Image 1 (cartoon, rainbow, N blue to C red):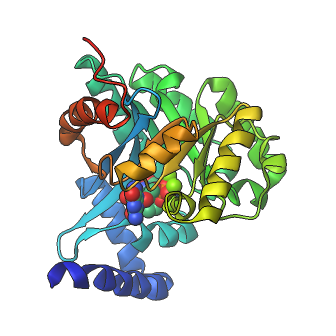
Image 2 (image 1 turned 180 degrees about the vertical axis):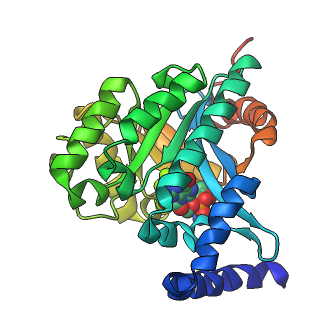
Amino acid sequence: SAAAERPERIARYAQRMDATWTHAPQLMAELEQALTAGDVVVHYQPQVEVLTGRVLGVEALVRWQHPVHGTIPPVAFVPAAERTGLIRLLTLYVLDRSLAQCATWREEGINLTVAVNLSVRNLLDPGFVAAVRAALRHHHLPASCLELEITETMSMVDPVRSLEVLTDLDRLGVALSVDDYGTGHSSLAYLQRLPLRRLKIDRSFVMGVVDDVASAAIVRSTIELARHLGLSVVAEGVEDDATLLALAEMRCFAAQGFGLARPAPAEQIPGLVAGIEARVPTVLGIGVPQP
Ligand code: C2E
Ligand code: MG
Ligand code: MG
Ligand code: MG
């Protein structure tokens, strides 16, 4: 079926783009043009507080709506954008779109934080903190609306420089998260020296919490350790209610995954939030909160 072929087609496309990127400046130019033309869009995926079933925020996930190739996922162009430096522009674009959306939701009475993924280049860019400050000011938003996600390995490229940037972002009031925790080689002992507020456990562990004893042990002990270090844990890749219940039992702070909501265009988010907040408290056995 077309659906079954799609991941393979995407992978092939990613490979081709990756292999030809440096020899095909037109592709880079195409992405740059797509940014100006509005062909790069941001989808949002809800993050749900496990204790209450409330949606606290959304993660911003970029998609390229290519006129010929259709929707291209980030794996197919973010790595290439990182190598060529276009990622700087891409990050600022996603940041601007996400904050604009956050401001719009607030005007509608929907209070959601937005989490934006960073690239290692952003942590080495001397102008990055000022750009974040300017973007918040431009959209009249407090820094508490914004979260920034980094991966474990990012801060290791230039630990001194990146600690400076992370410290400045933290002082600004932006919440910093470690993404895909468990897939890198850092320890919590190393990470606790960074000004982090959240730990996002990689979905490869979360997906096994119900059936796999080792994954369950890893997730449970990570939540425990993180709590002692003052970090709140977000589980990614929550695909079903059984996983959500297991995480609730482990006192995980928040959950994100297809079982709660898939990433979706901004206009679908208010409906998805209402659906989650009507359904999830019942799943958790805590009843629907009174208005
Ligand atoms: P990530 O930051 O770890 O984002 C989570 C990815 O997991 C998203 O894929 C999301 O659609 C997917 N996901 C969420 N829930 C589930 C689930 O229950 N099951 C499964 N199997 N997958 C789930 P997506 O949108 O394709 O993004 C892939 C990666 O691309 C992201 O991983 C992030 O590293 C990168 N990325 C996305 N947007 C941006 C961006 O604006 N800037 C940068 N630098 N990187 C981005
Ligand atoms: Mg992320
Ligand atoms: Mg992640
Ligand atoms: Mg990931």
